[in-house]
Length: 166
Image (tube, rainbow, N blue to C red; front, side, top):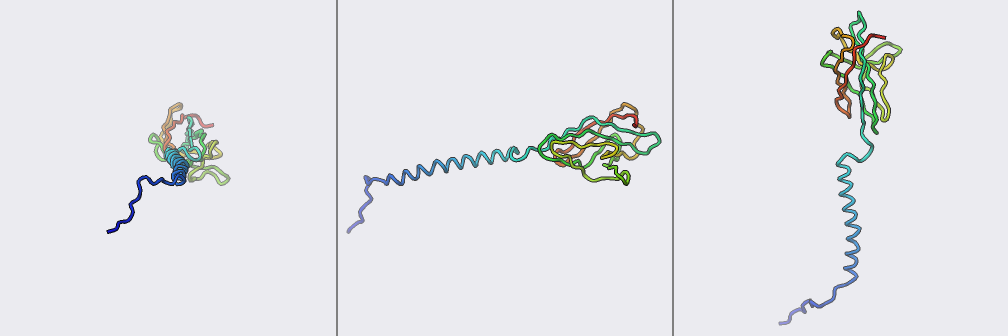
């Protein structure tokens, strides 16, 4: 019975093949490490533009004598790298509130309002305001709590001080 010659244990391996495998491991390992770091960076939310950073200052609320409504104005600033949208405003202290805009055709309800990145939103008698429908009488100097609801920033609590109408 004849048997096939066995592979010789002392047969030399090809040095070219081992060197090629070792040479390929370095870039493959570097790519794998870079991919893991990019995945971790993205998962933290740090990738891309910085998010919106909305701040709301102390507002003013006016309740003109003989008027059925009150109007509140807030300084709103977005120092972040992305725009945000003011969707609504609420007040447990006062009841029903709506966003309004004053224009050539008078005061009308408005939809969500964009707060640009690196800029602010002007609220005032000739622009966007928070209209409070049928508020209770307001004492001058009293602080009223409001919640401003933003698309990206969520709820931001703010106060407005009751002042005399200008």
